[in-house]
Length: 118
Image (tube, rainbow, N blue to C red; front, side):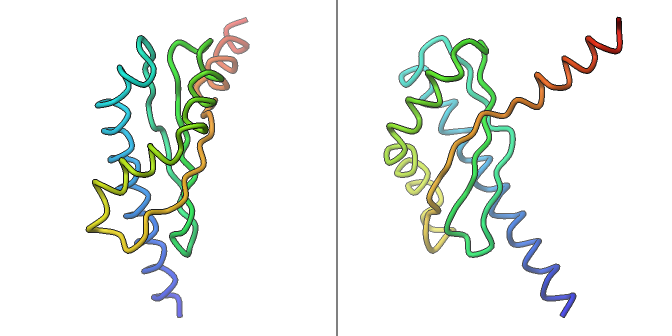
């Protein structure tokens, strides 16, 4: 039974890595048209066990544009998912529904470093 559990974990990790890589490429390729002058980086992807949903965590630079970018992505989620489907459609039976979140872990670590330096 433990063997099956670890195989499922490996499968989820592979799908997460695939989606992260392809979403990064999509944002790199289309980012200048979608949000000019803003850098969007995919930091992490978590896929549900049934592969039906994926949480995509992004980092945005400049930081002040976070909400604008997240709002645009949420409004155009179908376009983003379609772009993903064009790339991974042969490798995945179904392209997962995507949910986007701002990854603020870098801000948190910068704040900890700032506090430690005091």
